[in-house]
Image 1 (tube, rainbow, N blue to C red):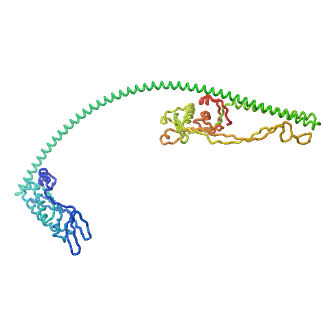
Image 2 (image 1 turned 135 degrees about the horizontal axis):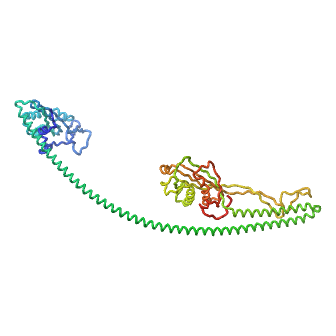
Image 3 (image 1 turned 180 degrees about the vertical axis):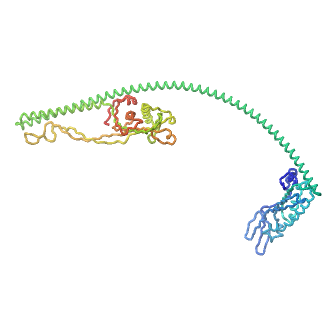
Amino acid sequence: MNKPLSELDAWLTGSDLQDDVGADDGYWLAGFDADRQVVHVKLGPYQKLYLRPKQFTRRFYHTLYPLPVESWPFRRQIKLFEDFCTLDLALDLRFQATFDYVLKNAELLPDINAHIRAIYAALIDDAVNLELQGLADGAWLNTGLADAEKRIAQRINELLAQQQIQCLAICTLSAGFAEFPDVQLGRDAVYVNVLKKTFELNQTKNLELSRQQRLIEEEEIHEKRQQLEHLRRMIDLEQQMQALEAEKQRRLAEDKFEQLAQQLAIEKRLHAEQLQHDTELQEMRFESELISQEKRQARQRITESRQLSDQLAHRALLHEQEVLAELRMRQRAQTLMQEHDLAERQEASMERLNSTLGVLVFAVLMAMLSACSVNSPLQFRTEIDALAASGATVGNRFVVLPGNPGGNEQDLQFIEFKGYVEKVLANRGFNKAATPQDSDLVVFLGYGVGQPEVHQYAYDVPVWNDWGYYYPYRRSFYYRGFYPGFAGAGYAQRIDTYTTFRRYLTLEACETGPYLAQQQRKQVWKTSVQSSGASNDLRLVFPYMAAAMQGYIGTNTGHMVTVDIDETDPLARSLLGPLPATPLPPR
């Protein structure tokens, strides 16, 4: 059975001597030129062949013929020693035609390589057979097949070189042996040589394997010792580093504790100073507000008293003029009313008395209305609408964020209104969180003032003249017709306008989780309050709207609810503190 990869085959082919002999493939220089081309010049009857130079410009009369380096594989197998040994020959040829060979065979230039293979195949076969016949004596069993391979390659190279063909031949011989047959006379020496060589090779191989195994074991032991030593050093180094790190952490902790203690002391002192400063400022602010309020009220009382005195004086003057006019008219009318009876004079006297009393009553009512408007407290009428999700179970920790488009948490007005809302939510049992991540609810605070709305109203005022006339005329029994009345009062209708503003406040409570994850506002409850009045000062109205909505936060009103609130409300006072009783225009 063939074993081409066995050590015996390696010995027979001479591959075991490769390290000693070296790579001799380069001892024969073929001198190939991969870019070799022949230029055929044909211009009329003139023809010429020459190698293409480096600086070559092709013309229309030039024909280029490349001379490539071609590979030519050659295989052969022979049987030796009555088919006991099989030799496989692999001959790889690379050849290239020279210019001299082309000149001798110019007519075959297009197929020059095919021509070479066809012509010299038989010669190469004869040279190989000649060398293989010399292997029949069996001497190569001791020396190997390397010399035979070199001789075959050398013979082929010389054969083609003599024909002006550049060639590089590489020959490989591999031997295979069948199972040992019965011993036969005349062939015992071959079998003995093969068995001897096999035994020697196996013994050498076993010794080499033992030596290599011993060296590998020694190297492994040495490497393990080095690893153990390195591991011991690494452990010691790690322990030292851990000790240093522990000492460093201990020192850092001590330094940090000392810094925190100092910082806490400083913060306590600053907090106490800040509280004292805020208290002093608050007291000064209250005192200033009280003094200002008293001054305003005193000035207002003086102004109102002056206005009332002026009005009464003016009314008295008008009344005196009216009486004088009536007296003059009576004197003029006495010449015309000689037959007027006492009843009519009494009737005229009663009418004058009623007129005078009406004027006095009007003046008194105006003074009372003025006094009422001065002393009446600030009042606001609000409308509240509250919604709440049914079955919602959410915690009571909250943060307040701007609800207006483009709102800014650092806006001073938002910060002021946020303080009122936080007090109202705290009164409802909610707890303020430090950050949105610590909260259960995000409360969006929206507020604003609508566009001004102009309204019209009509009222009647008395009309007076210097002579006491008024229209329409009275009925006279004396003339049986109409004549001018005496000191009577008439009324004229006037139309005036006033402006109101819609103030609104909205609290929208949403779950924190969906808002932080996807900016989604999942409402838990929503409370809205609005108020209409003559003032567009949202800072004045906001605390009262917040106080009015407190009782409805987190509930469902079902419809809009009207709530009236004034400055005397305890909740409004707790949110804002005392306000000056400054009269406002009609709301």
